[in-house]
Image 1 (cartoon, rainbow, N blue to C red):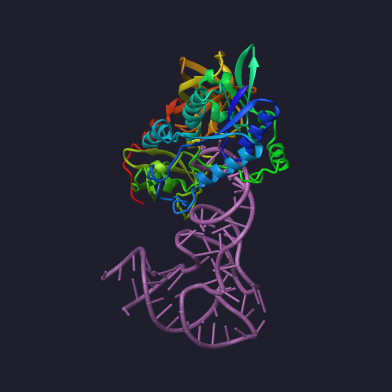
Image 2 (tube, rainbow, N blue to C red):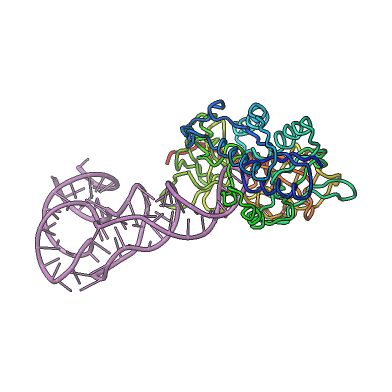
Length: 383
RNA sequence: UGGGGUGUAGCCAAGUGGUAAGGCAACAGACUUUGACUCUGUCAUUCCCUGGUUCAAGUCCAGGUACCCCAG
């Protein structure tokens, strides 16, 4: 098979390329560049802005070294405009609405398994491969997305929004490998990046002071932090959009009581609502509204399991259908920290059924905003 | 300027003569291809100031000082 491997400069994609080569495929590599700090006005909190060589060039050099070591051709392709238009604008819009989006899921949907796949086809490669820890298997002659064998690294959550048809054209060579085996292979090959630290942080943007990064695009706007249980102002925030539900760090609320957790926000009034202790009922919900659901299978279950965040355990859930893409996901046992903007991803055992965006969460039949409104329907008192 | 009370880290707070608990926050690290959560670690040679008693003072005594409350 002719396969184009997305080579990032990290260990995983390097080993993926090597494995495909060993299997006798006709392999070429491509390095994607999707973020340009100066072009994208990414100034605040950018630790590498002044560096002579930007981290992405270092990654490219690493990828080049890998390709050379394996004797494979390396293409280079920019998706900077596509990333901005399709991933980043959506990301910012969601933040402006007070939600917490998952940019990496958008990146996989629009860039890696759309634009990049198209690019590969045009280049004459009908298949693409990446270093994702996920598995594709034919079940009843239909390609399905499954969890990786390495359950600790499984990244199927991030792939829930990719086009179903794309599954036919993707190869995940790391599907059955543990991370430590991948590293072992890399070091046996004497790859220069064998010990390179796993990358974390937003896809293509990297590990950053997140608040400072957002300040480039969402201006700081100070406001009050209010204790939802008594409507008292107990602190100040630098911008309600910078916080996410369930967040504890960065509130700077000292003194008696605590710890304090963000439980909701009022974007219009610029108020951040917090409650004491993680055990408080404000973070719990029994159901949520999920929209834009991307189905990866033909199955439409009424019961299955779900993850509401990456690396969260699978929770048993029941599904009620508003329509094909709009679901009410119910979990009467209650789950903490289900957050609008994040993705609800459904599974049946190992099979990833698909995912959609959490639009609202409900507790005792009330939406989060209704609950907050009910609790704050008295004037806020200065403390 | 009569009475009472209180001053311990950024905040809250133990400690009542024997060599500064704990919590919150902050910071650092781990974990993590979202954002969180979580875990680990760091964080007062010093207790409002000055002097005194004592082998030993955050703790006792004296004076000063700041703030709070009550009465004027």
